[in-house]
Image (cartoon, rainbow, N blue to C red; front, side, top):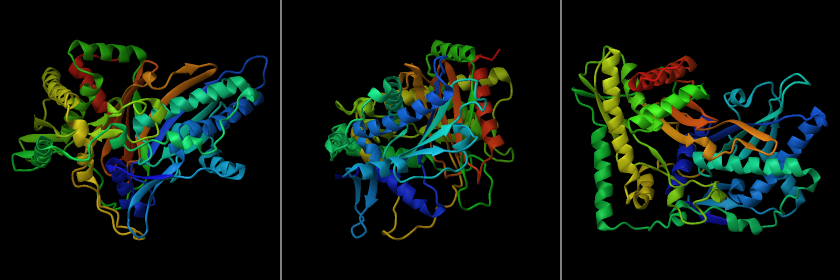
Length: 493
């Protein structure tokens, strides 16, 4: 089975191709969670280990039956350069065994899933689930645990889709674990192809042409973005400081900070009291912190933070594509116009003044989010916005030179919201902890991710160690936490 790709799928394929010479895959999706099972008195730890591993094997096969797109890939025709998304049905048990061995991989390591994900793991061309035995070293202590790390090209699945997919996987793991030998894996006989995810245009019923009003709006968006990025002597567009010298990306890394349940509760309440979301708060904080980390020798009275938001478009898709049944898909968009935050430089040092500045900036951010959310034309424009961003890649068979690091790298944020609504924390004997998702960072900026799970907020950052450091990324996160705490008057206890 094969079909053509749409603009967002082509964008992620082309971006990965552009960085092929680095031997890494730009924006490769990594999803993570831990599953734990307590050992009952009536069973041995060895039995629980074996049952859990067998349940994972059955669940992964079941997931392919219900979400066959996890076994598809985007390929490029050698002669025409045309991209297609291809799914091969399994002809016999031997092919099923081969797929299972190639895409469900146990990892022998003493590292946790979080640690292993920072070791530059393989960048597979097919979605692949790596299983890390992260149980306590003591044979008689604690639950049996597996850390699951899903790695997939971004032209197959996106961030929210990854979380939805992992939730479905855990559903099947729980059922297979409870039923044991009575659990039956669905037969992969080709009937699953009816559940392959269509492109976004089909899923959301987006026309292939724009009317005149929409064309004018698209042109206006392009003009606004161009104007936002212009630099003059009195206004400096901010970029994240980075180490100079490296021309090729190194290892993608992820670091994170979590708040206690009590601190998270008070922070969410404080956001609600001033009519903002926690996402608004941290996006505003990013602008302030990016200003604060600039070299004080910069000669500019005003500075500008330019950003955007990623929108999950699943709610705008028609049935059944707006459900987790089609998690393995790329159904998101980039906001139209740019978010612009202009600030004085250097920023205020007094806590009271910083609080006032934060509240002003967060209103700008909130208004931008509200305008983006209420834009009734955005769904129709989204494919054309992607189209304008697709990088040009050379003819097939040619590996292009890796783009140099940006002179003004950005700091973005992706918000997962309350992840409990996507991934249920408990089901049967299976308990889930620490779900997160990132895109492989091969640039010299920072990609921040925000979400809450089991009542605890986590702010994390993806960076590349060729240009940024662990301490630098952690410092940026801590500064963001501090900016929000001061701005809302919420401090840890």
